[in-house]
Length: 311
Ligand code: TXA
Ligand code: MG
Image 1 (cartoon, rainbow, N blue to C red):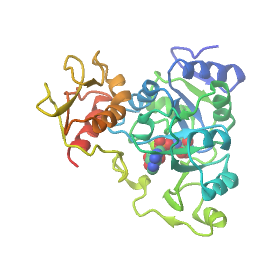
Image 2: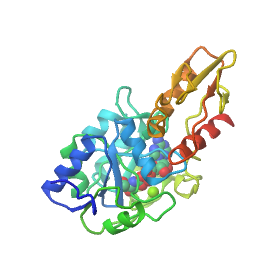
Image 3: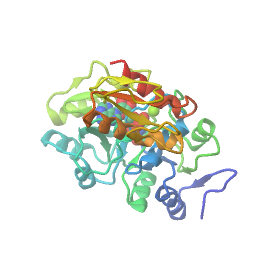
């Protein structure tokens, strides 16, 4: 079974899950329901696949994404859990709770998923379709809500189709239960309120605090205070390196490194944060980056570069 071209929607079934896992394994994206909202999933270890999520959503910026895993053991393979985090996981997983944890070295999670941060937002979903896709694909799945940037979060397959069009395969398993994105917690701080309430969290941790600048109320994505930014000055739209500059090339502009020698913006997005980390770690005092066309996902790349250049 494969997703039909004209209407790439399949109702939940074992064969549909296999079809979706095949898409994921080939580096593609699939919309799949969770108990909160429909997510747009890709292999979190495949940078190009993750870049396709941003491209499909038309996100003008790179917001770090939530990584979905089948169980706590899989979460502990990717990130570090202290006693509080373990207690929350045991109380509320599987379910609509996301924990922000320090990422483990060698986790394999693409830097585009975390937007270059050294923490990762991770959750174990309860929904049968997302659980089945995690099992069948055998991959950790990055998944933001499956709607175009700025749109309303989808709680039905038809919402996904209306928002993202016929280019995105959808696993249809009816309306989602919560209809509201998962609660996000870092340490004892609520970063985004959601179905797991402050009182529920406090019943496990004793006390919790509400984050003053919850990402949920930051309307322009990418404004998280913790976003990765290089330490060195960055010059944009560079056609050639000046003295003491590490140039990140693109297309015909060659440098010490290149976001995409072919001039492919999806590949450039996939490589962006790794390239910034490498440049920052180099012996050069200053950084420069070649011009990137501002169309499609290039808009998000340019947004990120502007932020990196103006700090
Ligand atoms: O219910 C949900 O959580 C849905 C379903 C599909 O699972 N997913 C979802 O993902 O809402 P997304 O990508 O739209 O939300 C991710 C949010 C980001 O906006 C950001 O605020 C926060 O999670 N986030 C991700 N990684 C983070 C990190 N390392 N530190 C702080 N916040 C992070
Ligand atoms: Mg969303």
